[in-house]
Length: 287
Length: 244
Image 1 (cartoon, rainbow over the protein chains, first blue to last red):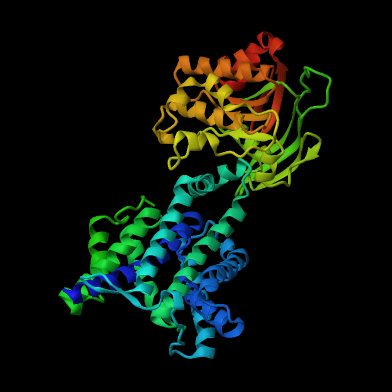
Image 2: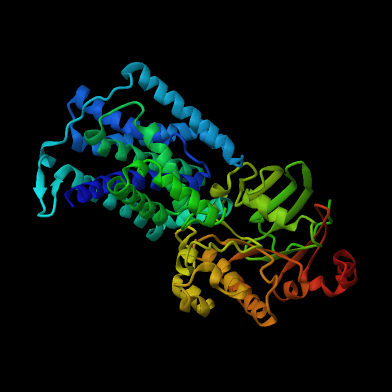
């Protein structure tokens, strides 16, 4: 039983990263109509940002949680302003190719300087150690990652579904021309939305650094699974991407316990099944 | 160039359009539109389908990408301005397709357009007074409303913003006579409140109940114009222009 709980916890942690990343992808897709393949590279940049903050300025984990999403978010906004905005109105394929190219360039630059091996990043003192829950031993940092991710996901959901700013976003997703004709600066809102989505990826990167180390290809490994999550959940659905992210993490964890051989492929099997039955994803809107 | 229609007042027009040309991609839609709207007037653009009435409104709103000529609003040239800037100068647009957002409930739809001028907008109470149906349906999804209610919502939401120049594109299209009557009352009431309204209509019987002046649009040009008092004298011409 101990092993089952341990795998469930690993599943929840992976699910946290899936949820944070697919949430950012969903937000970006809704507003920019771009499938952001650079997401994994920006997640990696978040982790590197934490690493640099610590090694160059001495600012630790808590600072990194705030600073890294802002720095990487600004980097993302520059990408949007200088490159992505020219893709408005073009086929999805162009956005996919451009962001894929951007991802390869970013990863290539980091690989050039840091190789492929991991750089260590330690757990902050306050979150070291563990708790005995009776039925299992819970490392505090891992519990923190799950809860903090959940809170950030729900806060993002609240922002988009329940606030005035979110109403602008949802409306602009439907009809940007009309929203602009009401006096809202839609191009600026698009840039900020990309910054938000990218910031969420960077935040996931910081959270992941103490668990998975900091590696140039950490995002490339993860992003393929995250895209499967997005396809299953349905492109553009906020709550759908959160729930699907956590659920698939857990399913992956359970598979690791019951049939480890399938644990790396179970998400993709799910994806195929969902695509066969409901091509727009479990919660997705028709394109 | 159209013959100059009788202006109701001698004041400087709040909107003056000169030699406006506009394109959708390669197709040239407007070929030099000229007209004026004075403060407090209801002016109606009449014309057949495809004459360029909607394109004229969209060009004024800055939604049509390629446009040339001159559009003066409140003394400022806005032909180059982006549509969000134009909206913030006090022009509000109610599109023909109404543009109610499906992912927003009625309250969110109503509150969506930001306030652009602190004075001049109606309060929520005044809006619910005009459109009592909306108050009861605030929690409904925007697109679950009936056609008439959606039209009222589309008008209601631009009354809050403080914009005093309203452009309504075929507000009566596809609606039942009793709703059309209600929209007529609303426009008359708005005029009394001091709003200036530029209306596009196919239904000139409806327009006749609210308009001060008319312009006839054909093939992307204004070909005629007259005041409401001259309507009877121009009936025959009007029938020819509109093909009714």
